Image 1: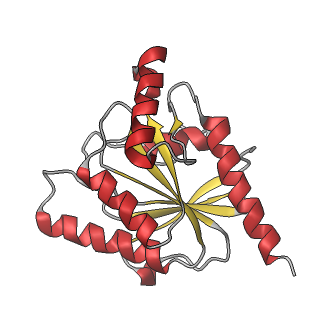
Image 2 (image 1 turned 120 degrees about the horizontal axis):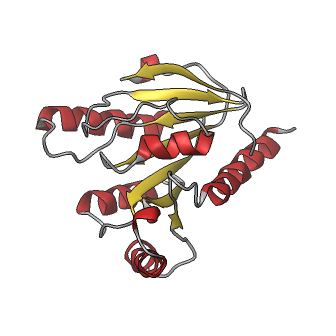
Length: 202
């Protein structure tokens, strides 16, 4: 997909602050320091549209971006960073859950994990929660460039078993540095946007 325009709309900490929109929306969620901001910048072929931070847990709001005047990306706060106070973690959890359950324009979640790591209890809990609530998601493993080809293949197979028990769902390996997986992820996103548009045609 060719990105013509990408602009920051607003940041929000509650439903009242979400932008009024009829555009289909994709949300990005993952643990702190998983490379979520870098992945979004890579997808959009922008270097600094989404600010990256060396301090995990710094982002404390949902940031909305309009893409091509056609759809929206929502960048959700990273979760699971131990140094963030427990009260803040609870507030983030409620913010994320409220958004995922109440945002009517949400098409799917881009669920981001670190390809190099074994599944954490928080990641598996989020997956089960998404499935229990009927929230569609795509699982993307970042930082594939930090593994050799054989290591990456082994890890993808391992994580597919852990998350999907070798089911039809497949983990997509991604590198924000080399853009590996970019075309494939855009293909999955475009498929959902196109299906949404066809559904809305009378």
